Image (cartoon, rainbow, N blue to C red):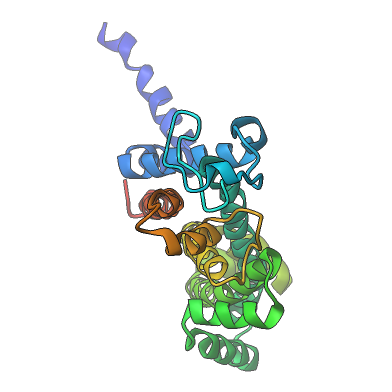
Length: 296
């Protein structure tokens, strides 16, 4: 009986060896209830934004003077705004603008910041000094102030707001990538790849970049939350999504004049921003813990 049970041990050990780091990270992520909550909420908002034409009961830009500032009812669950437009429809369509702004802005920051950070960290010398000084100068200006200044320079539109937010977030990724490259390029496997005669670009993109992706992924998740807040702020100031297209920030701008008469105009877009940003931060914290190699 005992001898027959012994062969099972090697297969268990073999299965443990085949357990990939991605699977272990996924298990650690799903063990964190706050991160799972954030992931569920973000997924729900993404589905709402993607399926908005099939979900919303009314046209988000259709006005009705007979329904001006009506409180929530069975016909209009979130009430109506100062032009009689359905707030539920505008919140759902506003998710498109806010989520798209967050994703594209961070994509711009990653596309510009990661290559520059790789170049600065791997090459060093004058290139590193030049990129680092420009990065320090941009970081000396607060993120939101720089985004407002760039958006005002480029002109009011959602596309220009995305570009402004992306440029403002770029130095964060440059500094993070540079720091990660400096710590990784001294590892033995990088030295071995260099000794084998691999060109610098191949070492940077094939050996260094894959090993710094977890840190970049966590920072990207947190930066999307900051970008959504920045887009809401720019739209609130009239520098983002332009009327009559819905945006959570522009909805808050319109609601500020009716806070006492129609508080529901501000509650729902404000709650949407709160939930999305909170969920992204919870997910980012969960990813940071799950991707930490020191966690077991």
